[in-house]
Length: 319
Image (cartoon, rainbow, N blue to C red; front, side, top):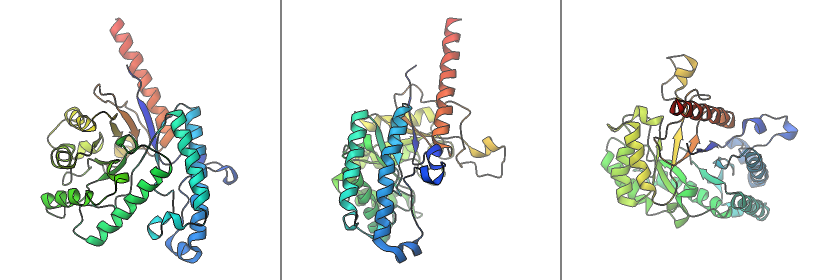
């Protein structure tokens, strides 16, 4: 069995929970009132510290053979309120991110990001679309500062995510507003299936978005349980994989929190803390972004589950 390239998202539990003097995190931020009171200088200090700690997380990952990581969208606090080049520490930040990018390239890491759910290229509101474009462009700028490839290998992943009671109109808006994005964003953008039946299945994304603007579809195996598009997980994943061309596809995986906690009152699409079943990619060679709440701890658990699955399958074949 080919070993899966497993990744985790944004926060390293061990490093972020260390004593304050040794804490490592890339999501230092502040409330809006603090930003207004302390301004760009403080935002710049936090961003610089976040960028310096990014390298530390990458080094920690490398020592443990983890080469797939999702960068936090909070790397630059309140980035919607300024241009990155306006930060007082901008030149130093550029140097730090260049060093991080060199480390990524030298060690063969895959880096991605997942801009937040407030990004809506589908919106009929021009103000919302403008804010979305600004946020996506900031992500593209950061990836350029890191020297990452302008391909979906270094994906910026979003959801179509809203339909405003008119799915054809929403998809039209998404595809039209996609054309307003710079090459730094267009070349990296991917779309992911939703976890609500009223929103967008992998099938819809492949048929209605990919066929029009050619951006790859990220299949979330857990989301699919709640928005199937009348396909099995295996069928939907096979469709999504075909949208990636010669770039290795990414799938997302988590399990259901109410099953884990034995609590039916928890919403069924909530992500679990960890894992008890190995991920099934149905024979496809994909990178797997693990979205459980326990981050790298869940990744190590998944490695153990996959090793045990492989051991059992080998023994079964021998018998």
